[in-house]
Image (cartoon, rainbow, N blue to C red):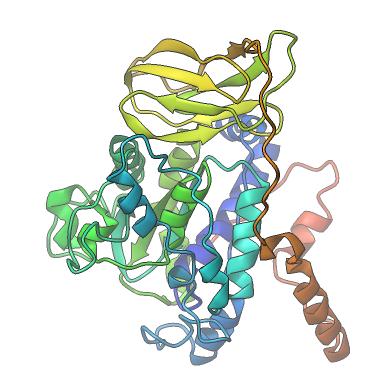
Length: 400
């Protein structure tokens, strides 16, 4: 997300290469993951900041240069503040605290094109789980990132899905040899007694973060990975960092298959879009996608789950998820239409700048600029992918 925090950028490039190579080599774990999971990777959310940081060189970059975009915006402070609204709604009995709309006042401020592109991306794909990769410490943090009391900078501020967020965070932390190291003298040693994880607002409070936005505006659960105290390490250190993060990244991606999943339809088998999936005791619903399918992350336990949609009767089911269950349980719902006519309310659509925003328009401008400067040299790994054909791939991620 921040241009001067390059470890996450490199880890995702390594991850993409690893998934492709191991899939072709017949690694059953990777083939299962890729065949059953829709994976999206965004190595660089702030390429302008990276270019600025890279000019100073690895090992010399400070904590500020390259953090912001070319517009001098910190992308992890540029998202809508929905957390304040969630805290207000929490005091109102029966008020919904999920899929909160973006306030119109937000668009009056300066919104980065990168922020708009990510928000449009998040709304166009039914994401379930995500991670934002950072540098500067060695810890995993989870929402909320904004304190329930704005004047308190370090206050525990949990979401309704506190247990699930802790499980996701612990999964990554326990699989990372550095984060799980019990030495308090190491990088990130002040988080050892917490198990290498922390609630974001309890660490330090801020508004406009991507993790809070994703949780409160979409179905997506996002955690923040701080991958090291050195923001811009030397190239020779990247291969070691990859091996430290590889298993943790894979286990986190596999966690998307925890909880329950299914399809909500009517008695004729027609999918019901935007049906609400509610879990008793957890004040945060998710919505079904266009095809009526849903994915609800849940830790082990017994739950009362319901599905409801306008014009249909509510259906409840009791679900038990064993502790050793590593795949999502299939829970489908068939809703019965309610007899009677429902008055169709007139549409009152608020202006949404994301509808007309085209993130590729800026890309085309950049491509035209590059053409005028001449073709760039291909990266060192380019021949590998361009000449694979039917040959068995060699291991790509070797240290030079």
